Structure formats: structure tokens, C-alpha cells
Amino acid sequence: MTELLFRSDAYLREAEAVVTGHTAEGGVICDRSLFYPTGGGQPGDSGWLLWDGGRLPVATAVKAEGGQVALVPAEPAAMPPVGTVLTQRLDWDRRYRHMRVHTALHLLSVVIPLPVTGGQIGTERGRLDFDMPDPPSDVGLLQDRLNTLIGLDLPVSEDWITDAELAANPGLVKTMSVRPPTGQGRVRLIRIGAGLAQVDLQPCGGTHVARTAEIGRVEIGKIEKKGRQNRRVTLDLAD
Image (tube, rainbow, N blue to C red; front, side, top):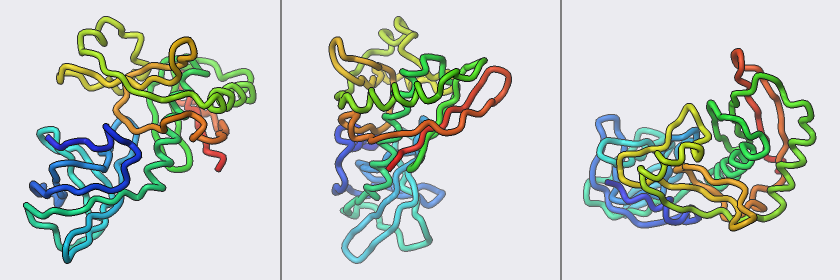
């Protein structure tokens, strides 16, 4: 399995790794990965692989067999051979914006406490689809509540529970369309706030900012009807 460096430190921008293989589709597999692989509505990271005599731009990262992460080249180029020691370097600005948007969407699910049926994260905006038969009556109020939570500068932390503990607490799962990964014995939880100031706790494998104030001000954009009961709520970073 690939060691997931982004899991232990989402702010790590550069790290050494060793090439352990290549996929049939032309991806590079290393023993460890800074790059988050596409999943849970969050795009895979981009950046560069640098080694003695070589440089390869990475367009994205995807999950591969056996718990590995494959780094997908952005263009045809010479591949680093197996055994090469290289440096992985993130497109940090893109990753950080994903972290801000992803954390903001967790808070959106707090101010709109309805089941989530889908979602997507981008660099400028994100969206959640809700099981929402009727549109919200006051979008401005929702936006104010969301920005108030962001402005509280709440800590964002992680915790782990067993598969059995998650099964015994199904209310932790807000997203109906993407079930948290189970079968490995434990599930990662993202907690926003602490103690009596905790506002959210839900399973998530993505990357997040360390404190909510890092998100900055957000704006709620379009609210679109998607099916009989689903509505899509778009959220934009204001800067």
C-alpha cells in the first residue's frame, strides 16, 4: 500500500519518495504519496515529480489496485524508472483552495442540516446536493450563519473509530451517495470545533484546513432543483 503523506500532514508541500512501479495506463506508483487521489468529490492533486535528470508534471492522482496511488502524467514524457528516488512537489495553491472549499462544505452541511445526496469540490467553488423538497426561505441568512461559523476560527481535527462504532452510529454519515470506506478496521472522522464548541463530526477522507478562519469569506450562489426532492447548493470562495 502507498503511504498517504497527505493524511498525516495536509500542509506538506514537498517530500521524497521511491518509484515502485508503473500502471498499464502510464501512471507512476511510489512508496508514499503527497498527492491526494480523486475521491469523495475531491479532485486528485497536481504538481511535479523531480529526479536527477528528469522532471514530470503530474495532472492528477488516482486510486490504483492494492491500496496504491497512481500519479498521472500531464503530458507524454520519460518516466522515472522503478527504484528512482525522486521529489514530489505539490501545486500547493490548487491543493490549498481544495482544502478551503472542502472544509466550507462541511460547514454548509451544518447550516443546512439535511441529508446530502452528492457533492463536488473545485478551486473556486464547491457544491452539495441536498434532499431538500422546498428551497430555503432566506439564503442571505444561511450565508450569514455560514460566515459566522467560519469567523469563529474553530479548530479542524481528526479522530478514528472502528467499523463497528460507525455501524452503531449511522447518524454520523451525512452523505447518502458516498459511503465512508469500511473493511480496513477503522474510519477517519473530521471534527470541527471541540468540546461544547463542536459543530460537526462526520466521516471523511479528504484534506482540510486546520482552522475555519483559513477558509475566508464565502458566498452561497445558485440553488438549483435537481429532481423531485434534490436541490444543489453552490458555494463560492470570495477571495
